[in-house]
Length: 489
Image (cartoon, rainbow, N blue to C red; front, side, top):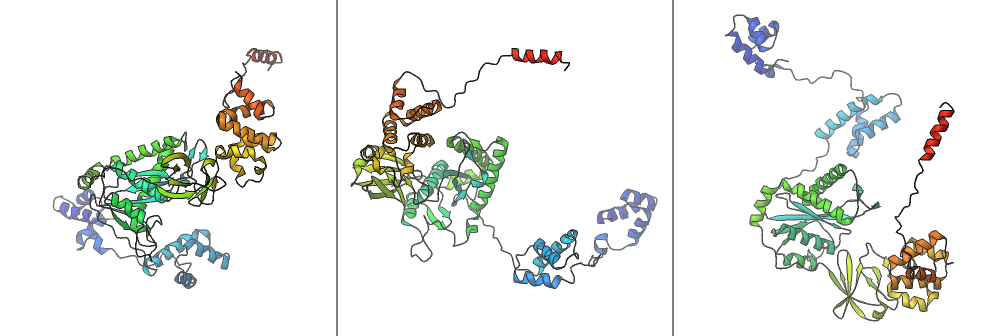
């Protein structure tokens, strides 16, 4: 196809060359074409006839009204779905290779007569003015810790102007996770933007019909850092679009880093956290110039961090338990009847009495669950062994599967098993667990007397990971080779 540039070159060369053939050769066209464009007064781009006719009959002409009627009712129909419907209703009329024709026609209908599409309005961000944050689930990345699936979220913090970002591993969209994540991000940042935007998290933003938009705890957190609060409108997550887009790009970067690492398994949570920290350092390295512009206009941090916990006054019940945020925890039986303070952090609880820390417990994920520590109640279980069989939280009194196996070996006798638990509370759970394992491997009864004797004797309990491999006698291979030679093999 001849271009305008070739024609302009041809007309210039006609005046310079002796023959038309020479000018045509240098312009990259034959003599006949050169004569045509020499005498034509308009360039090729203006002389082309627009292609508006079909080169073959439309196979969907007779059924297009049916297809369009379906699209008018529901524009969400995919062309493939409509094509398969036509094949079912008109057997043998449409071949699989004709689907592209229908897809092109449906695409043209959507662009010319279909419903209008959502418009996104690019935002102009100023340095140091805004930060955004949100939670995102990481389950699809299939991260494991020592082979066990690590079900978690990350609190994701982003500066929209520079795209500087960081995160904190968490397990729920609680206020404690929000507070811990936001404060960790600000202290890593080293300064404070003007405002913070989040979506409509129930821990931060009240329902639309409430006179006050933000919860008291969230306002107190932002006031401590002199941050203005912003929230997206209901059912409008795109208003937090920079953070939403960074979710997608961040998880894609994690996926690629995992592929380079050639493993999704980590030895510990600390190793996984270090992996994410290194990844963010690499991502933020290319944003240094715009990030420095933000640092120049941000406000300084306050003198200290705000305590990221919720304080609750709860009473210890007669079962030596407290109920905190819809979950049940055991405490020391000496506190029965007393009111204690429960400080709820992102991943643990602190139980305080008379302004003293008396216990630190892992926080339960979810609701209507329980965590009973046998050390809190074992002394009274020994006095009331009959209560063990039908105890509501009995399954919590088996620290691991070996203790459950010991209970079965002991004939499910509560007194014998509770003596083992008492020994674990006094001598150490890990030591008793190793002793039970050794006795079970020997086929001996894992009673408290046998376990205590094993703990007191000089015999060292081998670790469960030790493997003994017998020495291989290589002379056996020489014998096999000799026999094979004798048989002609």
